[in-house]
Image 1: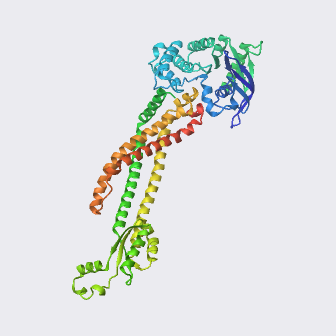
Image 2: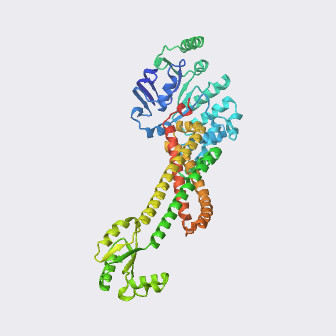
Length: 244
Length: 301
């Protein structure tokens, strides 16, 4: 589903965001991507969404080489993906229904399909009674569910969640990841970037750890991979950063 | 793209104008001024052209024939004159007719001994030209005809009228050009502001896979709608403004101006086409920069 072959990404500022990254995420997998800030997690996601282009190496998404993709083909690549943001990115002046429908309207889906599909998705994320509410009237967890509903509504093959639990309380965080787990069980590939180590520990999914642009740990390729150790090391890194 | 999508995009375009109404009104006002000024410049140019034409028509040129030219020769000269391409009308004006005219103006006594063969006046032709700007070339062709003595000198009037007409046309053209650029600038700036306020939506649209064309259409519709509103108001404004101004001018300089009723439909169509075209181009220009951006860049983060 997603393949990185010796991918490097350097920014014009001189930052080496990714350094010779090679990995594969299969269809239907659930992967946590962890790492300190500046480790290259965001760049990793941007490369998959083709918001950035790799400096060298090759990225293959859904069987398509991104380096050979023309500009006008990019929107169609993104239609296979659903993006969930840390800050939800909901449109304040639209109600929940319209926020979700917006993703369908933006790709030209007709009104009758929207009317059928949106209530179904809202029910799936447990927001069936909130269609007419404005984002400001919802809790953080509910807003993230709307964001998730919007990512799901076009029936994507991959869900990319960038710190989806960063702005919500721990209890809600579990619910959101559980919801992603549920979606994953129906065959959708899930990539979750997170700092929440308890969550990663709790869900026992594949974990890829990035550090200074390199893959320094991958629970799929290493049987001795000690999740607990990894995360303690990770927490130490964070602590170090905070102290600095 | 389905009909419901198209309806949605039009609705979004209308919403853009409404949500950003203060700036939209400002743009519409600027566009109205531009369209009305442009329309006025064109109408002024048309009126001057009409005056030049009517003055040109009424200013006949007189061609005097030599004394020894017989009636038959004079008739041949008339035929030669008619063959010239720039000559519209040719009318023979005999020495007897000239004599009678002078006599009626100056009195019988002076001319008492000058009748018949003693008439000192020459036979002549009164002609009018198609294009006064070619006056000199035509006069050269006329004087080359055998038996033509001289041509009354109207070249100064012809030159002056033609240069006024050319000046008005040139100034009008520059006014139109300058105002078009100003309108484009104002409209694209307004749309850029709408776009800034909707950058969040644009970033979401792009992240879910909206094509650039789909993102662009509401902003182009916004521009076209502003053009449409401006065109309608400009047509009404031009109608009343023209009638008012022409009323004042024709009181000072009596001439038959072009009636607004005969041109207002053309003006309305031209305003609609120009207004909507300028609006569409303004929208197109302002979104171009945004469409090249990706993700957080659109939000300026």
